[in-house]
Image (tube, rainbow, N blue to C red; front, side, top):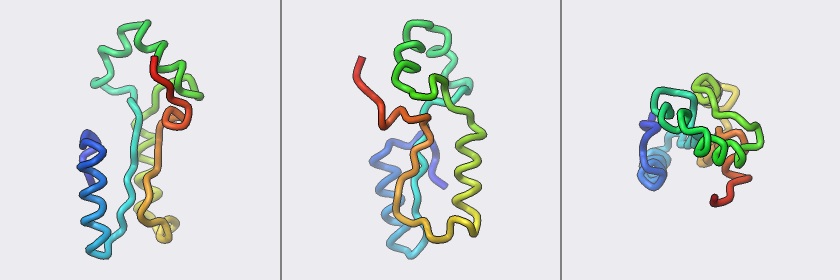
Length: 99
């Protein structure tokens, strides 16, 4: 498990090292979830609106959504998934544009 605050390049490098050891390496790239860490963003209506305008689901993610993906990846149902990144971001990555 890689700390979810890791810089993407660091996480990818760590995942590559894990993969070379013959282990399953899948990155879960999550967006901003409704946690204490987003309190400042959520308290600024203008910044929050600019972000939500880029998310097709028009809301921040939930930590349970990320946990569900990780639980699935740890299960035997996902035993054929290797070497990829799964984005849990409500479509932000696909839809993002600079404001």
